[in-house]
Image 1 (tube, protein in one colour):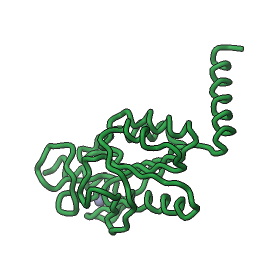
Image 2: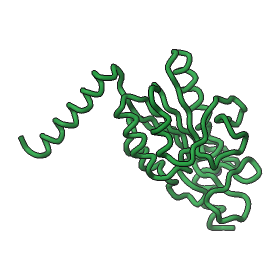
Image 3: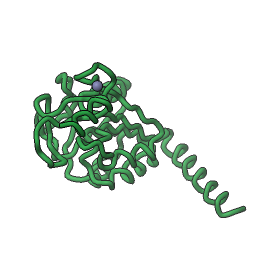
Image 4: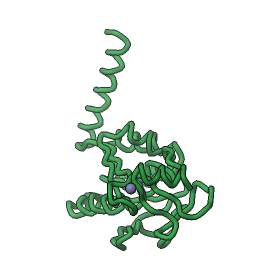
Length: 205
Ligand SMILES: [Zn+2]
């Protein structure tokens, strides 16, 4: 058996062993897009559906995001679901024992360790659903989101509507002059734009 075949075989055995031990299959799902694209609403929809099926759900967000309140993922339409703020991705592993579904909101603010954390949770048979911004206000890939898209079984890219032309928007344009990457904002600070309108602002203003 070649080294590659051997490695594949070990990987397959490991996955099957996990499956038969836990009786469930773990996976990673990513919901990503710009601001005002409905990422958190989609995360809450999937988590509430799991709760309805009596699955044990745990939700985490970075402690940095305290826009609405200390506890609870709160979506823009105030449709909320209780959650735990954590300081770093490692804390999610520690707090996820005996859980069926783990939800993570605002994942772009976590460290890159989140990628391995999600892999480990999924390997333990947990369904992991991650929501976050795929690009920062400069249009660059944001934190661990690109890596999470790479390891995920399923990636859903959601879109906002461009506030200038009405096409689908995937950029978060910052309206105020501030170069800080982490700026928690709402309607006064950001607007969703399509590529054409975003580039017009970026290069013509
Ligand atoms: Zn536009």
